[in-house]
Image (cartoon, rainbow, N blue to C red; front, top):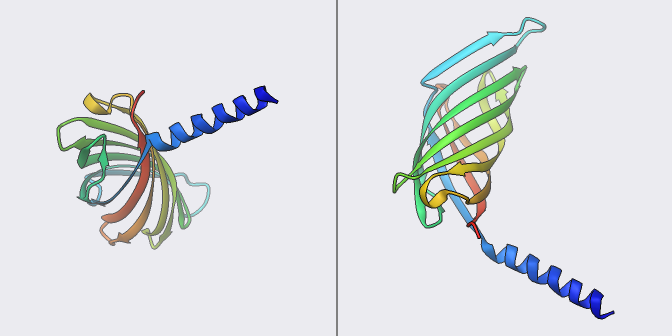
Length: 165
């Protein structure tokens, strides 16, 4: 019985340590229309294509990781568009206020109407960083707030990060 109790205490302590080590973050980003965009029709059915694009974003409400605000970023996206749905794989390089870089890998689904995003559910994982962000672990989710016909978007993001031990 003592072993079970000790084991249970260790698990609860470990979970408490993990929970307390995670710090919440939230912010709003605004991304311009793609600077570069290439589209190839697959040809197997109407409205089925592969698109690769690159765009710049600024944080109109920055979030902080390790006490450093994010400032701007460049996103490179590969999308498969099928009808009114786009599935994406995206890499974002964020430049923080102090010059450190955060490297994000994002995946998600975007609902389209006449090619304009109507809603988006994108999940991201911090896959690397420089300076104070080296070794930081983070996850985030972004939801579309607003989209324009020119391809620019505004999204609200929230998540949590954990500093290296």
